[in-house]
Image (cartoon, rainbow, N blue to C red):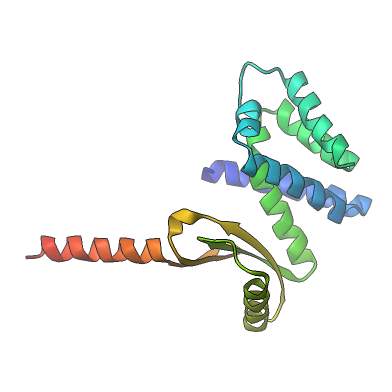
Length: 186
């Protein structure tokens, strides 16, 4: 996501969060956005469909509305996705969802943390990571896990805008760079 798209996603998220707070449906809207983001992240076909210029805006609204109807989404979620489609910004949806979740977590005094691992973490490992981060940060942790086999091993921890990369891939890349620099200096 480009910097300008990130800024746009933040603006949409801020507006949506304010409206959701006023209506008292901030948690329900978060659930709606989470479901849509999961679908977006997990389905290449869904992303292609949303990004297909041949499909009319009206058809896109119908498609998204059918998904939102299945999850019994809030009216505010319907209006938000319709606005994104109308403004040709539906591809901002995942970024908007992340920004919204961060705003909600901050409002609740929580810290949103994403853990990326090469394999699915066991529940006891997730619980111990959550406990350690909670103690270190002094806040309630809202932990999201993601599997990315390309990191080979280790973990990548994302806390807000900060990232701690303890992946094997990152370490191998550092060794590769150091080796190239050493060879160049010979």
